[in-house]
Image (cartoon, rainbow, N blue to C red; front, side):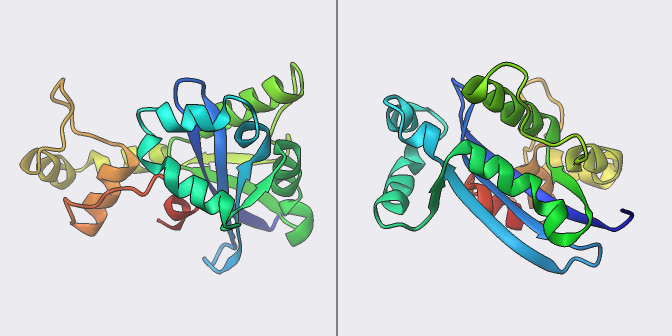
Length: 197
């Protein structure tokens, strides 16, 4: 199977527990044609006794908790068991008769969290991603190209996009703000919207 499709994936997690509760991807072909959009909340987390409580108190997500509550109450987003989401992702290759390449900014984080969640929910050793899925980190590519230019470094310094230690920021929000030349750009931190970037 030499043909490839690219699944741009993003997850939102309850940070203190590293539990993925919002999982999305966009599948496109090598020419950039979008083949599907997918977004689901993880039923195992949302319906758990601690799920919504975590969302309401998580420092990073709590201001978005009401949006998720509204989406759940008004059926604005699918809620599926983690196993079904996992099966949906791993059936991409069969649906398009092509090798699946998972792409994400800081892909190692998404990869580790989803595999850890699979192991936590279904038992030690369970993995979210099938062995045949290739992983590509968009951040690695950005660091070797965009972020490795004097123009990017200067833009970050001029726009106060630096860490407390004085390093230029290389997170997805900063890199995309640079690409848009929009210092006010703020990442949505909703899985599907962030995939759209």
